[in-house]
Image 1: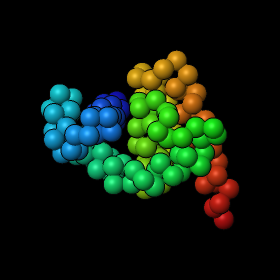
Image 2: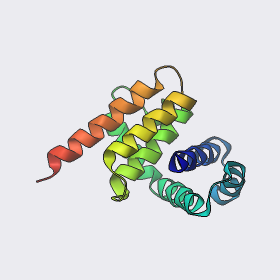
Image 3: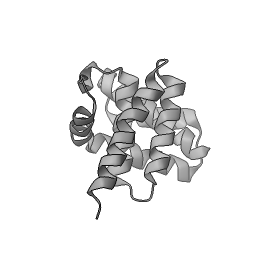
Image 4: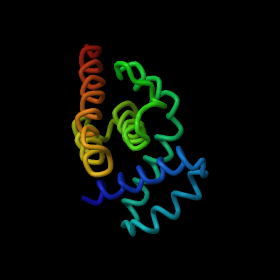
Length: 137
């Protein structure tokens, strides 16, 4: 559950960076203080936030390739940032199983997104996982 709270904090930080153009370090400190996470979970959140932001362009390209008739910029900001976080986890965090990354993203989308956000996020991430599985030997 604490990793879920860490992901919620990361989503809030990524959202603020995306829409408010606030530097990650400034917003992350505030979000982590508000979340009151244990040190190991705050460190996990920091790793995810920094990684997702560092790989944002790559994640956006992946998302664009998977989202039929949607541009990343046209997506709801919450959905866009949930997808960025999950794509980063799937592509760059081998310590996090794909199924966990997808499930956590869908739960975030259900909690913070619109009525159809969970299905939208699940569809895109499910396709990413299927394509990756098909590429593996």
